[in-house]
Image 1: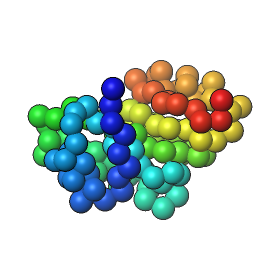
Image 2 (image 1 turned 45 degrees about the horizontal axis):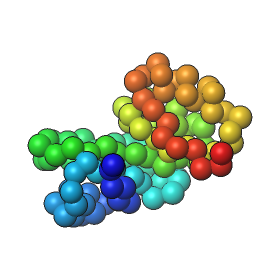
Image 3 (image 1 turned 90 degrees about the vertical axis):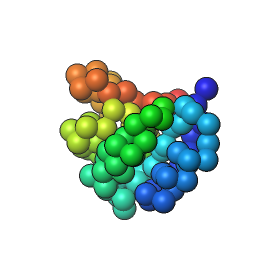
Image 4 (image 1 turned 135 degrees about the horizontal axis):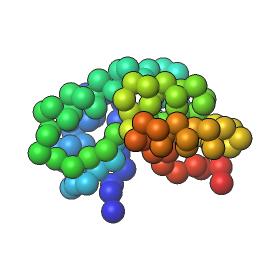
Length: 109
């Protein structure tokens, strides 16, 4: 089972990857798209994958709006946590399937 650690800075990513046992899930804070941004979080992931290529971990972007989920998949994120309206879930899961992504958990169900 993976340990889930909330990260929003490079220092937090580094600390998590150097402190905790693998596998890890590095997740953004709730609705991070609004204040961290999708490209920044993706850049954290890419830097971590370069520097810690020997480690096993996943990055998960916490999204509230359907457009943020779509944007995350377009930017190359493979895992998102969707917290928005359940009515959009079938379409978002279809998009995830098309790009090899996954929506992990849905807290409102």
